[in-house]
Amino acid sequence: VKNIDYRRMGQKMRCILSVKMREEDVPALMTALRTAGAINISLQERSWKQFALLLTIVSLWGIHPVIARWFLLKGIAPMTLLTFRLGIFCICSVILFSVWRMFSKRRYAPIPHVIRLSFLPAISTVALASLMYKALLIIPSPLHLGIMRFNILLIPGIALLRSKSPSMTRVTILAIAIAGILLSLSQPHISIVTGIALSIGTMAMYATYSQVISSTLLDNKIGLRYPYLLFTTGLLLGFVALVLLPYAHLSSLNIRMVIGLSLFMTMCVFIPHACY
Image 1 (spheres, rainbow, N blue to C red):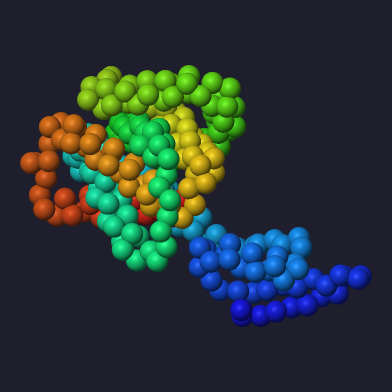
Image 2: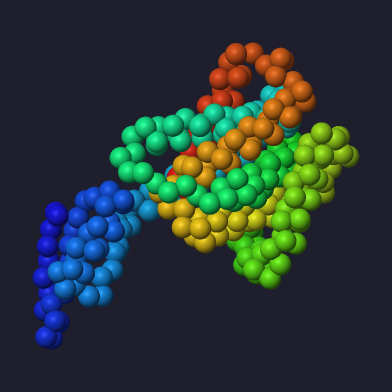
């Protein structure tokens, strides 16, 4: 306990505790306070931590299209970026899960149906990346980012559709994911209209991913087991990366480009997902 502040409110006493503790110890504290007779207990985290995480996520996701566009202009194919993204995500998720299990002092219950819960986030990621890298090959990153700003308008509609027809939502996401991969393999007519259409598709998949992962975390009370969900999602993405490997043209990359792509995907893809 760092500080205790007492305030009298009529016949009742309001006590404000400032504590520094791990998240897994919070339930024990709440139980102890209730046992001591406390009522109307509320918990409030320091806002600066949430702001720092939000700033990190927004900044890294914001510069992602800019750096990806630079790699594309250097001659890196969209399929190469996609394969690197999925592969690096898989490797990083395995490392994070291993470290989490190694240093975690508590035993956590397994997440029921974790593979099924990971499927939609994984397929949304594949579709999102496929459409985005193809779009950035055609249009500049500022235009793409400008279109992406409207994704917040789609999230309520996606949430409503998912609540009304979950099966139709899954089918729609799967269809868009397959279409995105096929577009990455194909060579469509390059025009500004095509690029804008691909960016709109990216925006739709980004909104879908945000809604899907948020509802998955909340509905299933994932909490501190989030590295486990990332791990299974990463394994699915790693499998897709292996399937796409013959189309990635990795043999044409020099060691500096491989290191650069690996660092880029770690910083601008995995770290925002981990912070999220």
